[in-house]
Length: 296
Length: 277
Image (cartoon, rainbow over all chains, first blue to last red; front, side):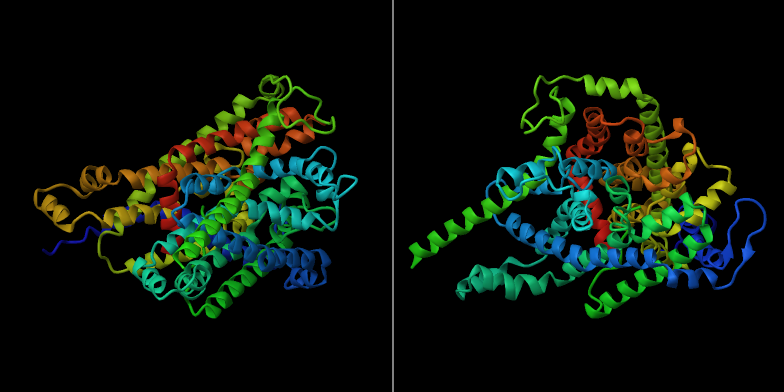
């Protein structure tokens, strides 16, 4: 049956969601670009300064430090999170006792407010009475508490570790969903052929959930480029700029120093790097990964 | 042969349990520790810390209500989340309804939806702030809710639910003269229970947890949402860890309960979102 398309109605239905996406996603991309050539003023006309902000970026060591920290989070933190999620996902996919309980608990941090999680770990890592230091001292590994979040050496790993703690359960659920698409007949056949667990995992399971792992990787890219809430409450970028990330630095410049034009220019650079990294990963994975994801 | 095989299996099972128990402990212990800290009556800086609450009491929670306008902040969070959830149900289902038709620009619209997932909100904060200021919505509940009024993942959650409704039902109800709005209201939505649940849960959690946006656009103290007030609590009150962690518990409990009560819908939703892209 041929039905006449209610064109006006379709437009009406689409309008609100497209308006929200346009105003808060697409327009900002263009607006940032525009703003990056200006010296923003709270009152009066903005002044055109050409490429000056970009020159400032190149000479700004803190920008490079925050980019480096972002990339460290991505290149080191994300693979660790995915490896852990893979291990846990493979285990809870087996018919073992308590698997539902384990799944629920390991996923539990994911929905919790990131600000709350930052504060929870701030307390855990406290040098005087934090549980982590208490355990290390009880084991005789250290004598005095380590001020994890105040130390140049440990602050960055601590913050990245906290984000991993939150996201591992989410990656695990993705891995589980990937595992469920594998036909059991494949494993059964390998079992009859006498392939051991490790062998089966390596040669059958892993290649089949490759696309799921790449999906985690892409999500990891976005997470590392957007990390903010936890850093803000745990270290606020410190000590020095040891835990400065791109978004924390952009936020600080825009909303603490009122340098909106400069922040816009950094956002443009960040967006281009983000797209480039995503594109490259997609190419490297042979286009198998799903697109990127942001849950808002 | 089979004996060594079953022994191997047993060792494997035990190893798996050990790893999973360790992982569970790493998750549970910090959550427990904060809960304990919020209840304990011990001096928080006494060493070694006691693993259990000493003289447990609820004074820390009472203090949170007493020291700051907690109820007001909670109300802000509830109002903003309420707006977000309502708008998500309405706007996302409308968008998904539109996508059930075949129309000329459909593939462009879908591409637009999907690709805007590649624009994290964090890259939009500066223009979003300027825009909200232009609209005069700084410091308002609506301003806080705006960026989340429609969410792509939830649109696709509705879409896959609507796609599952047999076309024949829709066609016959059109023949029966049901208006398009009625079709959404009387046929698609009643069959979309799980999608509605997922929309409510995800929209609530995103809105409740949102931090960077309130941080940017809230100017007056009384407009703070809970995560924002939580992040500022320490700067107002020094060395008040018992109260701070009571506050942490109060902010985290609603999302934890919503998640635990709706695990299936929650997980289904984030999976739908992740796999769609």
